Length: 92
Image (cartoon, rainbow, N blue to C red; front, side):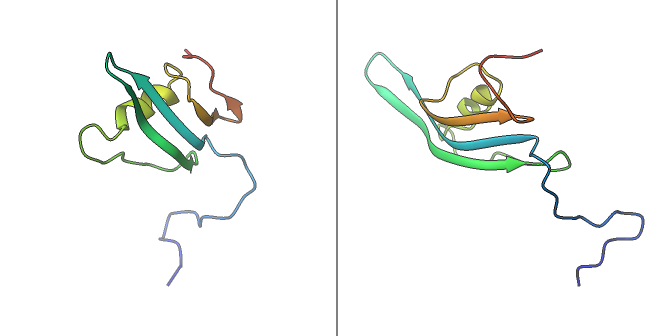
C-alpha cells in the first residue's frame, strides 16, 4: 500500500532540480609510486529531503568522493552540481 502516513505529505514526482547531482564522476590521486583511481563513473542525485549513507570498506573512495563534492578535489571525469551550479572550488 502506498498511502502516505498520517501527518506526512505524499511524495510527488516533480521536475525540480536535485540538491546535489554527481554525474559519471571518476576521481584519481597520485602517490609516489602510482596514480590511484579512487572512484570510477559514480552517478547519483540527492533531493533536499533525502538522507544518504556512504558505506564501504576502507580505501574504496568514500572520503575522496566527499572531498570532491565539497570542491577540494576536481574530478578527472564527470561533473558535480550543487543546486544546478557546477562545483569548481570549496564554498562558504
